[in-house]
Image (cartoon, rainbow, N blue to C red; front, side, top):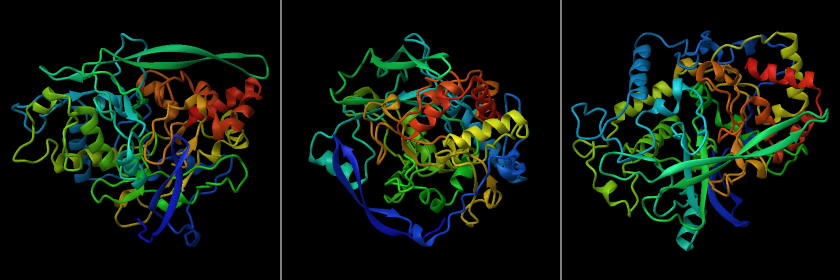
Amino acid sequence: MIKKRIQKEVTVNRIKGAAVSLAFIPLFNIQCLQADVLNVSPEFDQREVRQGGDNTTTTLTNNAFSKPSTLLKGSHRADFKVGNSFFKNPWVVAPASTDARDGLGALFNVNACQSCHIKDGRGHAPIDASDRADSMLIRLSILPQNKNHEDLLRSGKSSSIAEPNYGGQFQDQSIFGVKPEGRIAVTWETVEVRFSDGEIVQLRKPHFELTKLAYGDLHPDTKMSPRVASPMIGLGLLEAIDAKDIISQQDLNDASNNGISGKANWVVDAKTGDLVLGRFGWKAGQPSLEQQGAGAFNGDMGLTTSLFINENCTSVQTDCNNAISGARSGGPEVSDLILDAVTFYSQNLAVPIRRDADNPEVLKGKALFYRSGCKDCHTPAYTTTSDSAIDKHLRNQTIFPYSDMLLHDMGEGLTDGGHTEFLAQGNEWRTPPLWGIGLTETVNGHTEFLHDGRARNLMEAVLWHGGEAEESKQQVLQMSKQERQQLVLFLNSL
């Protein structure tokens, strides 16, 4: 990636409305860089059919999210299969004869990556209190309680302050002899929205509760942030977007006067300790797929890596701290070879080909998407970097993810109660890529969207938009029934 950077102080609103300065966050000198964000019109564009560039897969079955990048050849195909094996097969409790896969827990959410990312696709929220939250987790944090906490946030070296007894993530499963932290329960509230033609949509709003707590009460200032698993497709291509092309889309003071600002998240690189551009996760809290994977091994499965060497036990969780480790010879439970294999797999899950991209009704929906301002956050297209640090088959690809990769205020309706993640506030979320979204039901058997799975279809997802997207939502509310159908047809073609 481009190395030229400047140091610039950025002030953000983080703690109870107070301005906290994150000094020396690295920002690109975007005044002297030309972004390569493609200008795409609402008319039919043949390039969009292969939305993952030359790595697009033509598979449209329930395995549509599980195919390797088309340009992968020879030994790289074998590497992909090795990564797939470690991604989908379960880890076991240590000690075990399968010493390459032991060390699970002692506290965890799932025992395999694919238990969350089912068929490499999208997770869903539990239906009720009796349903396990297997493809969703709850992040935890508290408001800063002292100067040390405030200094941690001010320095940018901590994403948030973890809950003292339960840490930064709630684990509802455990190995034998260790109590799970508790259970995740959910109830649903109905929220009605009316279109201008009188049609009423009943949205559902979740209320999550942590029950059967095993390690004491939650801190009274605890903030909870539910997160369903996101699709795995095209992640290597997103990692190959030049950072300047993401940063150049920021409009922190809304100079364009369209109500949309967008900001980059700056997060800690676990290897270097530097603050770097965040790209992955619902709040762009991870800078790379390697670190995203290492964080999931640690938080979701209780496995250590060279990036996160400590078990995910808090000081009060004595049995967790005393559990047998799967580490060998003082190394982590997940070796660098395994972490590299899973990272390679994550980088090379292909994006499916578009369907019906030239259908007149789909194109009318695309025009409505553009006219309503949806593309102002869901940036249609990029050309990936030519940097030699990126694998050759991912370079110089024209791709259509429909995301600016930036954080946006989505309004109080979608706030997660004040949980922060580096620069991301409770009501700020990274624009999720839309490619492949129309195949969700085919792959995962449901059509639940947004960070907590509350939307049961794409129109419900649109109607939850607020904040910077409020004006776009209001335009959708004014659409005729036929126009709404055309908009959804376009989204389903992606």
